View (cartoon, rainbow, N blue to C red):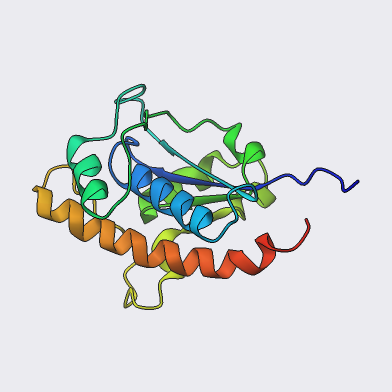
Length: 168
C-alpha cells in the first residue's frame, strides 16, 4: 500500500480576492484537472484586505471567466492570514505591492521564499510584473486581465507539472 501523498498547495493573492486572484485560482485548478493532476494540486486564493470577505467574486470576474469556459460562481472571498504561509507551498502575488506585503508578513526567510509574482513565470510578459487591477475599469479590462493570468498560469503550471507527477 502506497503512503498518502499531500498535494502541492498554491495560493494566489491580490487585494480584495474578488477579481484577479479568483481568476488565477479557477484557471489553475482547471489546468490541474485537465492534466489529470486534480489530486496532486490544491489551488486557492485570498486577499490582503478584508473589504470583501465572504462575498462572491465580482460579477465582471465571473462573466469574464464564463466567456472563456470557466466557472467562478462558487468563489467566496477570504482574507490572507499569516498561517497561510504554513499551509501553502507557493504564494503567488498578482502584483509587486502584494508581494511586498506578503514578504513583510512572512514569519521566516523560508516562508518569504514561497512568494512569487505570477507574471514572472510568463516569458511573453515583456518585463511586466504587475497584473493590473480591473476593478475600476470596464468589463473589457477583465477579459484582458484574464488573458494575462491564463498565459502566466499556463507557464507556472508547466514548471510545476513534472514535479507534480513525481511522488513527493
